[in-house]
Image (cartoon, rainbow, N blue to C red):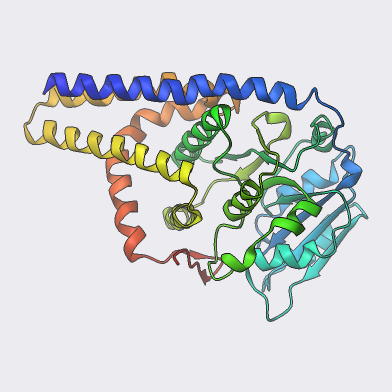
Length: 371
């Protein structure tokens, strides 16, 4: 049994060291090139689209971020997805800039996907940048964006930041996936994107967008858009620098957390990206083997081996992923990784079961994530 544990841990450590740490080095080299090439993006050729629904309690950070900008993009377009709170009034009373407009989504249209396409018809700039309504960013954000050389799409970071200590647990799996996405991009290309901070050429979007293939699914606009750009062989780049990152809120409750994760799982499984699917299978196998070994040691009451398994795996994860956590300014979250390792088996099983029996919700609506 000890030999099996050592074999598993050795393969696990080597695999993720290559994938995350070595891949991260290759990605860093790419990112240095992305700011050296010419020509660069012009902030005055960027329109920001921000769909929202009942975000009255989450808009403060976004409004403050926009108001303190040193330089602004060409325009901000907010799209109201049938809010029944005071979101619109809050925007009108809070925003101090002039270059913005608020669109009302027609009654026959609902959801983030329709909201973005409805607003896209009004975009005349070379680039479109999508934000979520709860994001925050630095006052020089758009000055920094101008350091990027032109490409068809930039997948940029949306960093979750908790307000309460226990919300750090909600950040961990997001950071882990983001680190893996960075490593994979270093070797090949990004496999995940966040609509909370996604920059792309407007003309290319209008040409390659295939919303008709997924309009019946409520979630996953960012994942499908990344797929469409990739399928059209566009120049898709990932940049993980904090200079181009935004901050977004963590879920505020277990229920909100579960609904969010179920939405993400659903859209990932439906995009049908071969590379992503292989990595999911790879990760699933590691997870299942870990669970089997863990249960085996527990049932055999070999508590010493159980603790060694958990302790060594935790040490490996801290070593492999720690640098990425620190790069994004989330080193404090590393303190919660040992507890996360203890909860991980239960968390994984719960999500696996819920994927087949539970339909997640968002803003009072059911989210359909299956074909």
